Image (cartoon, rainbow, N blue to C red; front, side, top):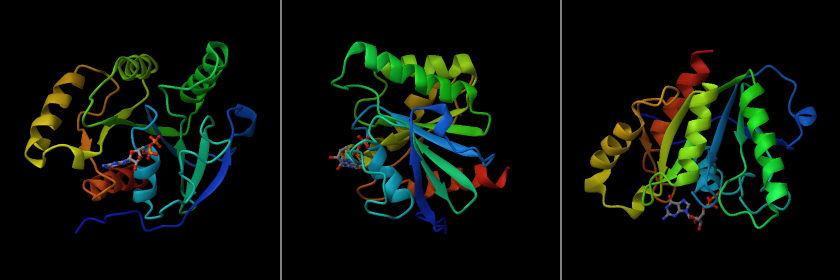
Length: 202
Ligand code: GDP
C-alpha cells in the first residue's frame, strides 16, 4: 500500500525573499506554488502529517516569504508566497515577483515545482501567466489539483483528462496531473509517491 503521508521528520528552517539568506546547502529542493487560498498550507501539512507544522498560511511574516523546510535531512520543501490578492502596493508586488522569479531562475538544486490549482476553479489568468514563465525558463512543474472533496468523485477522471489535455503542449509541464484533498486525504499518497520518486532519482 502507498504511504498516505511522508513519514520522515520535517522542520522549518528559515524564511526570506533575499537570495543571500537561502540555504547554501546543495541538497535538492521541491517548490510548492499557487494562488492564495488554493489550499497549499493544508496540503503541505497533510503531506507531512502535521496539523500546523509551520506551513500555516497566516504565520506572521511568512506569507510573503520564500519558506524553507528540511525533510528527513535529504530534501528542502520550499513554500513560495501565494499569488493573487496581496493588499500591497504594485511596487511591492513587483519586487516580490522579481525575487520569486530570481529564485526559480537561478536555483540549481530545484528539481520540480508543484503548481497547486483549485479543482473547482481550474486555471485562472495568473496561473496561465505563471505556467508561461515556467515553460520559458524550462523549470519542470507538475499540476496538483486541490480540494477534490468539493467536486463530485465521479468527475475526477474526467477532470484530470481535461486538464491534462490543456497542458500537454506545455514543454516543462509534467504530463500527469495529481488530484488531492487535504480534507479527506484523497490523493496525498500519490503526491508522496511523486516526491519519493524525485528523492530516489537523485
Ligand atoms: P493557502 O492560502 O493556499 O495556504 O490555503 P490554506 O491551506 O490556508 O486553505 C485555504 C482555505 O481552504 C482554508 O479555509 C482551508 O480550510 C480550506 N481548504 C484547504 N484545503 C482544503 C481541502 O482539501 N478541502 C476543503 N474542503 N477545504 C480546504
